[in-house]
Image (tube, rainbow, N blue to C red; front, side, top):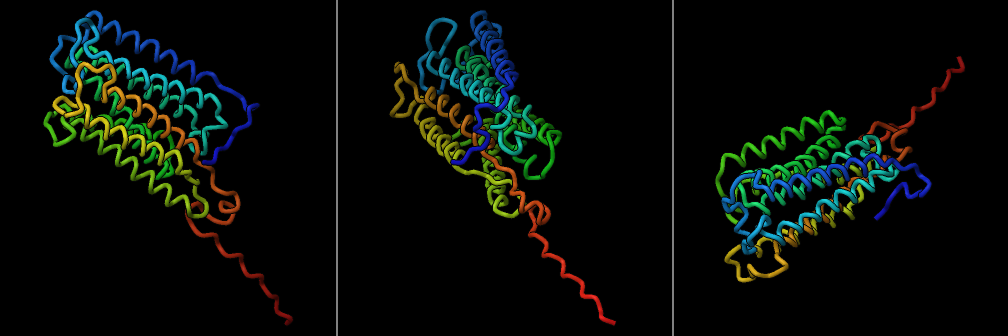
Length: 301
């Protein structure tokens, strides 16, 4: 697991931490107030299939609600890392604002999911899925930007399209086996698309002149996500392992592990290394170096 930019004397930019902290305070505060005063509407049972018994008061599912603070902490950890531009790797190092944007999106996963589990309202359910699509949409768009060798404009367009498509399909309704409502299925499809593009970048990175991808953090992120999903399947009502009165709920563990997977994904991006200078000077990125030109032999005539 190789890292670059470990110099502790490297300049620090505290703006990512300030922005992520402000977003965390405002979003968690507003979500708490919305749950407390019923701004998100009545309890319609959204999210009540995740085993935990409904409690009286303004937080309907305490474990499944407060475990989402893991996303807030993960987003702040991303922001701390982003405060050292020299530690952001090849692509994010050239576009550090994208690292701050990702930190904010990870933070927002927390209050987005809290809105559903605390209130079980219809609006809370929409906010939960929207926050999920913000993450999967960024993962897809960031990979597309690197695959196509384009800039943040491409990421922005891809991000809007991915989030918009996810919400559009989700709002049509419907259910699928194992995953439940169709929104979860779209989220899974976008994650798999992002993983596939990252694999393509790893393969392409073996060629001369291409950015090198360090797979350790990426594999760790996928592994944690797979473990989280396995636990998620046991945290549904009616499952033999479901205990509605337990303080520790499987769905709460899913939240914490997902937060860890998001942070590891960011570390995968920051481990990306610039192409070797020798490769770049020898030929175009992604192509074999050109052979040296043969010296001309002057005629003696």
